[in-house]
Length: 230
Ligand SMILES: *Cc1c(COP(=O)(O)O)cnc(C)c1O
Image 1: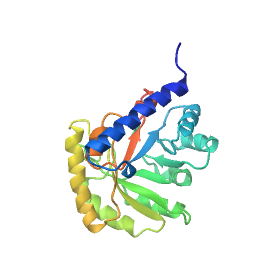
Image 2: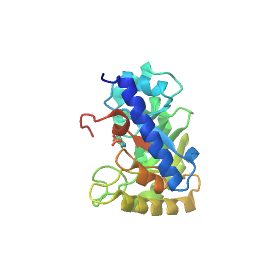
Image 3: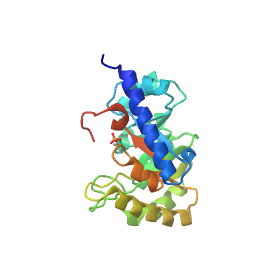
Image 4: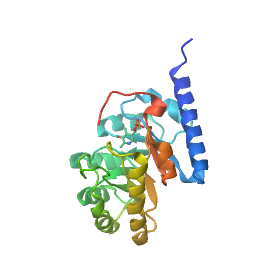
C-alpha cells in the first residue's frame, strides 16, 4: 500500500533530524545551537500543515507571492524565513511576513527592511558569495563583509544575526565553509553578537554542522524533489 504524503514527510523529517543529531554529536556541539528551517518553496500548503503538525515552526520561502498565500493559511506561531534573491520592490511585503531575511547582500536592502520593520525588529543575515566569480549568484564579495556589517549595525529595527552562504558549484562545501568560518572570525572580533551561521542545505548540512552552522535551510531531503526554480 502506498504510504500517505504525511507519513512520507514524517519519515523524511525523522531521518533528517537523526542525521542532524548525529552530525551535531560528532562535531562535539549542542543540538540547542542548531535551528532547522524547512524550506517549503514550491510545495503545497498542505505539506506545510503536515510539517506544522510534526512540530516544525520555522519555514523558509523564496518568493513573496507564494509566501503571502501560505502565511495566511498557517497558524501564527511560525517564524517565516526569506532566503530568496531580493528585489527592492518586494521588500516591503517580505518584511511584513518574514521575521528573518537571510539574503541581504546590499546596504540599501537592509535600509529598506529597517524602514519597513515598523518598530518590530527583523533578523538579517549578510549573504556572502563563496563563488569563484564573487557575486555572480548573489551574495556580497567577502572583502566587503565588514564594511557592510558596520553600515547595517547603525540601522534601527535590525538585528544582524551573522553570515549566510550557499556552497559554490565548483568547490567542495567543506573548503567553502572553512573560508566562511574565517570571514566569520573576522566579523566576530568587531561584532561578537553576529554569531549565527546560515549554511547547510539538503546536500551539505552535515558538513555545515561541522563548520559551525546554526541555521540549516533544508528542503528536498524533507519534501522531495521540486521543479527547478532559483
Ligand atoms: C531552495 C533553497 C534551499 C533548500 O535547498 P534544498 O537543497 O532543497 O535543501 C536552501 N537555501 C536556499 C537559498 C535555497 O534557495
